[in-house]
Image (cartoon, rainbow, N blue to C red):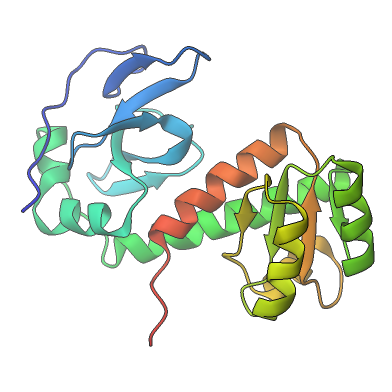
Length: 213
């Protein structure tokens, strides 16, 4: 059974803080498990003016942050065990289906950033163009449509074994984000937006509802 970790009041913004990694990345501590991780790989919540727990996937809302590991079980445990109230030290209202709400916010954030990456010139789409980009050695991340052919996916990932693979989105989602038709394979060049997309996709992967088998 998960128990709430103690939450400190120190930190430059009042959030639960564990200090800085060698690269300057600030770590936060999960109020459920007590595990620490970079803030970019966790989910922040704040208490709104009406005492409602509000997801802050952009890490911008004012107020003391309550952090959770980007994992569906952590969010559901915090909600069901009243751990948000314990960490906030006040009565709060938790929205129904909070994990689904967070997952949808992360999905939209990631796809919005993918559209920005296209406009920044970081995106290559189309099978042959992606193969050519991989051959240059300048592919930082591969996105493969979740509903694409597993055999084709293996062919592309084998060409760039060093590149992380994101397969959280369907072809229709990738196509809508990039303004293209039938997008299956996407290569991202190195850049700040690419790193943000990779972090967001990892968070979304931990929060999205598992497929029904």
